Length: 377
Ligand SMILES: NC(=O)C1=CN([C@@H]2O[C@H](COP(=O)(O)OP(=O)(O)OC[C@H]3O[C@@H](n4cnc5c(N)ncnc54)[C@H](OP(=O)(O)O)[C@@H]3O)[C@@H](O)[C@H]2O)C=CC1
Ligand SMILES: N[C@@H](CC=O)C(=O)O
Image 1: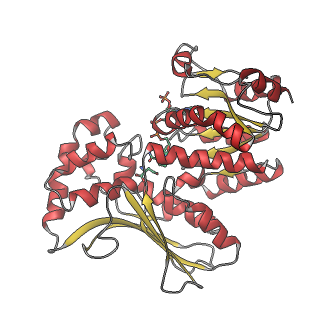
Image 2: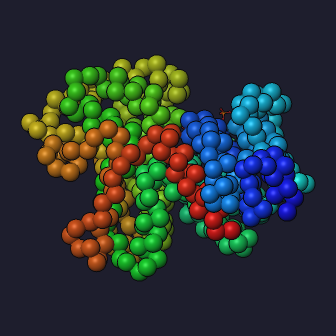
Image 3: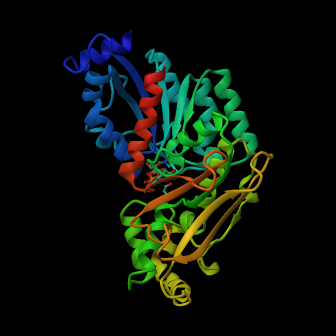
């Protein structure tokens, strides 16, 4: 009950005696993580009043610094974290939670790090549930994927990652429920990337260089920290793999057929070098556009198919030309569209469509995962 007393002390008007304190450690405070912190701080009191759940952010970290406060961070957190010493370990966060007897622990990974995921099992063994917008843990080896699930099961902990596919759209939950209820999903296809949707929706019909539209996508917060993750098709491939593994398929990332949209000379540059030379993309994409038939547009699509009752499915990503008058051709803005074909629904797929990228919708999706866990435990 100590955390409740702390919360009551800190926010006496906000919480009542029925309140459950959820203690959050947030790793990564860039576009998505920073927006999530603002959203939580804004609605903390309201949620405590309406739902009896108090969201206490006791830890915030970036790649170098860690800010800890058992009573929860304040609106000055960004200033305060910049004043912390460089260097910390995730074990420090676990020890701090133990030392202050914090309960209902959730660690949230809003990094794009390929190494931070090595802390996941440590956190689960340290009594934390996990939430991530980062797709890496679900898309490296199947061995890692299974081992994490075993550790979660052993510790009676959960791992939610709704934003891994379709940002804030309720996709993973839908696929999970369909699959768990015994519905036979036969194919999933569509435009999986908000960034690539925005790029090709606009480039196909507007008289602007490709690089100018890419800069807009970056400015809008749609791209990965390294936009080549989007342009290489890797981010779409990861989303396909997350969905495939939801269906208990055992595919590995290197089995996915991926069309890379980055001309070879730009593939090996550093992020900064690449960002300084994006105009070199323009002739390559202009050429693709010039070859389009009238009333046709470009779309980058992903498809999960094959016999999905077997151990492995067929996963493919590619750039295609479609009629501007089809559902795909009509896509606007940064919308993603997912068509889920199942045995019961036959030729009429379940369609989920909406903003497929952006800091606000993604942070809201992570927030949703936090509330899902908070209501359960
Ligand atoms: N943008 C979108 O629409 C969507 C994004 N996502 C995912 O959200 C995640 C975050 O993206 P975004 O906010 O744009 O990324 P940013 O680059 O803006 O922010 C990343 C944050 O992670 C921190 N970080 C990096 N490495 C580590 C580490 N090892 N330990 C702790 N913190 C670390 C960075 O700190 P530092 O500054 O010190 O490097 C920074 O605070 C990505 O995985 C992305 O795939 C998912 C769905 C949609
Ligand atoms: N860069 C990604 C962000 C969400 O995962 C995209 O554009 O879809």
